[in-house]
Image (tube, rainbow, N blue to C red):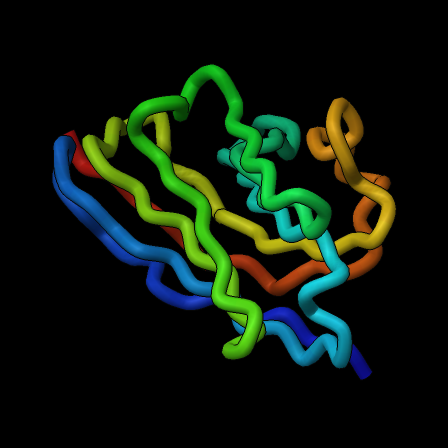
Length: 126
């Protein structure tokens, strides 16, 4: 059974930083595109960032470019999301996702991913 387990969320002040981690039990982790999505209360889930398995390309939502950095450690089967300069509007549950299909334009499409974690809460106080 595939599991994605996120960690690293918490309560931080505006301008602070967090590092989210997602440990995956995927046997062939290096062949999966890994993505981060988030869902704020009363809002739809939205794409945040992705790290393609092919070519090592990274993708970011416009709202987080320059503040968020996605990285992955294939031997550890872990993907990270470094979040800097946090804003109150970043408050959300952050989800990790894994998929073989997402690439290029499709990395932003949640339904292209095969597996999801349970989420980790990030709360930014003003």
